Length: 106
Image 1 (tube, rainbow, N blue to C red):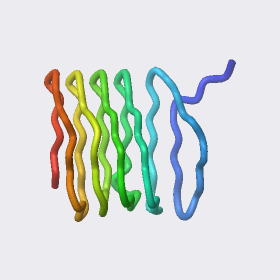
Image 2: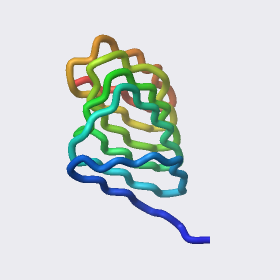
Image 3: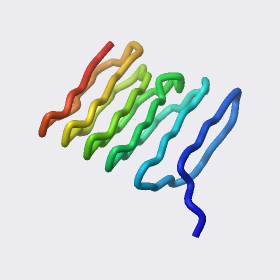
């Protein structure tokens, strides 16, 4: 079966998919989403700081790195040395971090 290892979207692109992989890298150049859900596991790298999102639910596990831009509420978990970076003017950030994980608001 073919294996997808990365996705890069630019200038008004649209992607609707369930992406899974041992080592999956997702990058966006611009765009917006009213509600965004991210499940990053096993060393995933989701650099979504250029995507303007409203409310965000993020679960980062197993040394995953997630960067998001949010204007609404950001919540969920970060575990196992994962890092979640939240930029933008989010209304509230409630990320429960354990196991050496970090949640950073910029």
